[in-house]
Amino acid sequence: MRGIITRISGPVVVADHLRGVKMHEVVRVGEEGLLGEVVQLLDDKAIVQVYEDTTGLSLGEPVESTGNLLNVKLGPGLIGSIFDGIQRPLTDIRNVWGDFIKRGLMPKRLGDRKWLFVPTIKKGDYITGGDIVGYVDETQSLKHLILVPPNIQGEVKWVCKEGEYNVDETVVRLKDGRE
Image (cartoon, rainbow, N blue to C red; front, side, top):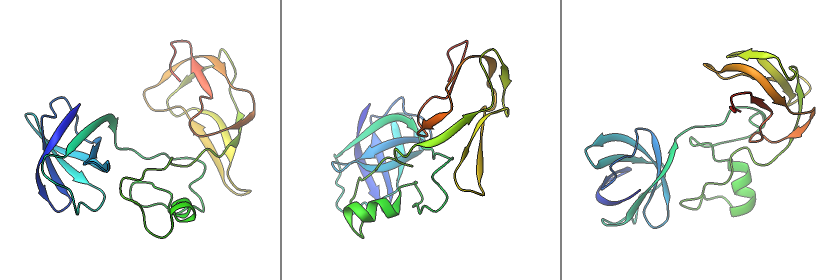
């Protein structure tokens, strides 16, 4: 879904023709694709909080819906890392792009680093929200327990073998297809 900027006031932008977007949905604002979040809806208008400098934005520029809600990832890789308020890895950005963050830049959060995952369940087990399905040792003194999300329950159809996985890889699949 694509709308247009009809008003700009500091970090707040009004976009018309965005019927169907949701509250807290991530949008890309302007030609540079600045990161924004829908914070209010009025018919086909969306009030957007832009999380980057809006200097240079102009009326009529596009606002593009992503279909995704604003979120952050929790898990291995946070300890010892430095992030800004929208979980951009500042050390990684500095190493690649220098001291200043380029507008519209959204590098992969938590990267592609792989972690040794040790499952604690097996095929056929019945799991429910809060159950531990395995763990990852981020440091010698920090063990991340990997839990079943709330409101999820079912019989385990498949669980990965002990091995190295990144935070986006599936480690458990239920009989109903949920991961």
